[in-house]
Amino acid sequence: MSIPVTAIWWTMADIFDVIVVGGGVVGCAVVWEMTSRGYRCLLLEKNENLISEASSGNSGMLHTGFDAPADSLELQCITYTFPRMFDVLQGFGLVYDKIGATMVAWTQEQASKLPLIAQRSKTAGISPTRELSVSELYSREPRLSRHAQGALWIPEETVVDPWLTAISFAHDARRKGAVIETDALVQNICKTDDQRVDVMTSRGQFTGNVVINCGGLYGDIVDKLAGLQHFSIAPKKGQYAIYPKKVKHLINSSILPIPTEKGKGEIIFKTVYGNVIIGPTFEESASRRRPESDSNTIQRLMRYGDSCVRGLGECPIVNTYTGLRPATETKDYWINSYPESCWITIGGIRSTGLSGSLGIADKVRNLIVNQHGLEPSRTKRTDLERIAIKFVPPSHAMLDDVTYTITHPITLSGIETRLDSQL
Ligand SMILES: Cc1cc2nc3c(=O)[nH]c(=O)nc-3n(C[C@H](O)[C@H](O)[C@H](O)COP(=O)(O)OP(=O)(O)OC[C@H]3O[C@@H](n4cnc5c(N)ncnc54)[C@H](O)[C@@H]3O)c2cc1C
Image (cartoon, rainbow, N blue to C red; front, top):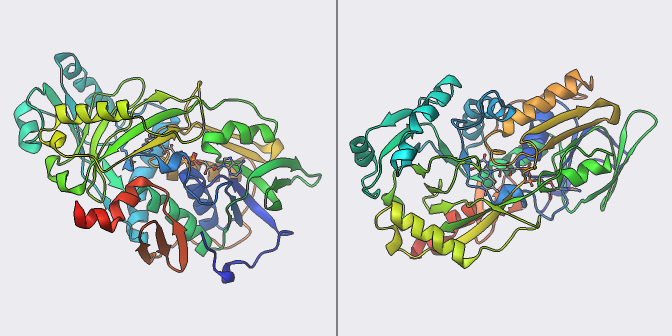
């Protein structure tokens, strides 16, 4: 990521209102929210590029929350985010497609679960889901295999560019005065006598009034630096197979299976750029490092796709990718404040961090005001100014005058001109 010289106006002796550790979608949304509200913010990311861990391996779906656990923090964050995200996407001029999702029951047993899922979604007051008759299903999705037993229509499910959405939060925060440091591994934390925190990094020391741990896949390790140990991350791997855009006519919405306790299951969906993707799987992972995809699993995903959508099996895939969910063994959506340590932890944002991002950031803002009693040191700037976006193939994008490396396969597959012309 190259930083224009004009952006380097601060000195390391400066004290930040808020220091955010981690530049995934959650950290980017938090730094954006806090900067917009007038807090002087610093974002520290250990990697060379923002959005390069969990947030670069997701499905790019803005979920309505139709299957989130009732009364959960996750549901609250998603329902807060969903309507507001469209204002943000439109304000920045980002792509999205409210393509809708069709949850298909392939067996009678699965079909028996549809009314309950529809009822839960109605009770949560989120999305006008509706059961479809089998004939209605096939008139909407004529290429689906003929053994479906029932379906649920979730009209508001939306696909976005997951990289561009997240990076735009960081970029707009920077336009509004936030400092963003990459290659800055947070290595140590020290509370000062004057109720501040010194943050030691591989790029030097920074001081802030409150530190927000948005460490995602490494959130438990970052918490330990502050002497906290409430959860441990047990990453869950997801694998995907990507088809070319030329098969996009085979589906008209995202085709969901019936969810299980492991999550939404393997989805056949069309990205905002038109590539068809199958995934993600849900597998244990012994490592926090992004895994390779394995051919047996990819073959299985392709067979699954072929068994659900007629014609898909005739087309070879163009790529694969994997992602790691920052799951904990105990609970999802761990948002806790420790005023005595000048610290806020956001952990275990397992499977809906993009969909819940604005809600998480709003929760953080409330904690900063109500539990840390910290007022912004600057004027708030909540305006949404359009971002001039130019893709620079094969793997960069310019947002206004800043060049960023694209780290998400959905964006890369979408813009790759070679794929555009050949496939
Ligand atoms: C397979 C899969 C599919 C998904 N699909 C969807 C979807 O369709 N919709 C949706 O809403 N969500 C989806 N998710 C979930 C979503 O991607 C995650 O919830 C989200 O990415 C979590 O973001 P994060 O910022 O918490 O974590 P991360 O992206 O892991 O970011 C944490 C950042 O902190 C940095 N960091 C860690 N330690 C340090 C340190 N010591 N110093 C400095 N920096 C540090 C890391 O380098 C990293 O960049 C999916 C996830 C996966 C894996």
